Length: 146
Image (cartoon, rainbow, N blue to C red):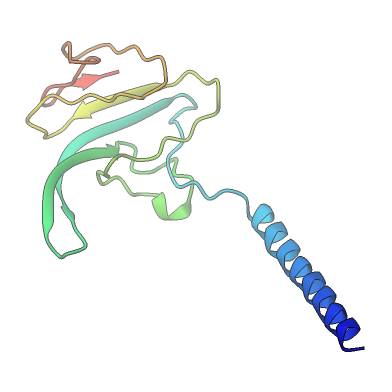
């Protein structure tokens, strides 16, 4: 009798756990993805800029570095909090594109003393403007590359 009761309790516990997990998984699937980033301006073009800034670190100190910002002020942000946000970010804003799309990324250097460039690993890239760089063309101070 006790063994039967234990088996019944275990079975009911497993059923309850299964119901809870099913609810959690279905809610997560219904929520979709929350990828925060920017979409191309005009459907195929991103306009970014490079600029130096001080990044605050968890220990309270800061580190001088440079990052990329959205020249369009977050006009095509994928989330409401990104609208109007154009400050430089590290490593850079997330660029949201569709697989197979051909896009243009314009980069302008607005304050980094050294020439800057952008390498997108695993993708075929061609650059124009600027000067030859180690991997791809680079933008000197106040210069742009596409």
